Length: 489
Image 1: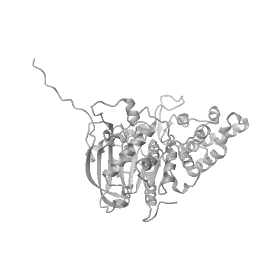
Image 2 (image 1 turned 90 degrees about the vertical axis):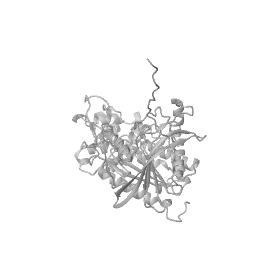
Image 3 (image 1 turned 180 degrees about the horizontal axis):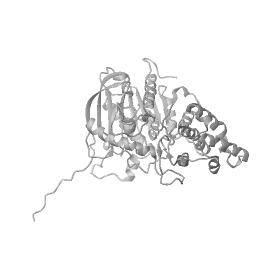
């Protein structure tokens, strides 16, 4: 037999620097206008100017804007770490919204629909996927060999490495698209709040880029310590919210509005529950019994369960226990969602009911949308969650970095958005962040909190999609300084 000819084997590899541009129109917040969508990749460069990664992004620009120096730019990140920017992209701030029912549950046919509540009327938006999320990937070395796992972690996969390379990427993006004069905002969800909190100071100190606002959606602890009794006590208002939603509280509490219940539970948490937990074994038997009675009433759990937990109820146990008598579990990130386990016994649910529901809707929608509506085609897999672990969480000073950035920049404001039914990054922890972000209280008038009757992704509920975007729109409009308004104390 003759020699066989060499065959080129195709590779699913992302291009380092390649975009597709499409034109669209939208009716948003009562205004009809055209916009341009640019989606594709932009490199991350190292200190030597070598491209080391290709980050996939989607950039929406309203057309017909005369003065881009007055047009805000909103830079959007999701979290994980390891999560793509898909969630806020096609369900919250972008011009398209996920096709789900009014409470956020999957419906077919899958896909997206117009989002009349998007903030594209007041700000251009870029959605960014960090390395290994979405289509974003590390590039080979100059000699064609891949970086080792240890090298990748040092370059990309850690609190501070993540902030450093993304700040470089933002600098390149702002320069390429000539947005240096524009008011600039960062928005992050979940771990993305750690990311944007760190970026605020990194952009100021290393890129000399000053922001007007940072938006923390369902924030993590952003490096603000809350361990022991504080960590345990802060869960109780969330427990009350979830129990109220499922009609698991006593009739006197169920007859009240959710916000009235939460105000009562928050006060009890600070005045009684937290001090009781701090006393530990020093708590008298009578006090322990009184606290157990009240915690049981507010959480919807049995008093003996509370006592058996030493007054400290873990979240995973709560998700399993709250509706155990109904044979159902509640979701972690959004406790409105219900699951069913193989066995009623056990201390934690078999799976996260809300996450499976979300992936059910989001995965087909983003794969369809980027390819068929925005025209970006690749054989690279879209990573809803990508391989970024182990993640280096050491030296997480992102909350303090955000405070320092605010202190240095009188223009910089912070908006916090949280869902009451989020059990992973609960809303009372978010309030705690707000109280301790600036312990002096000197910048309290530049930090605002908004709560919603939904969960981690509050915007999946139709009513809160509008409300959250309205709050974000108002925040942007209120924090763009008037002409001639100096940044000074």
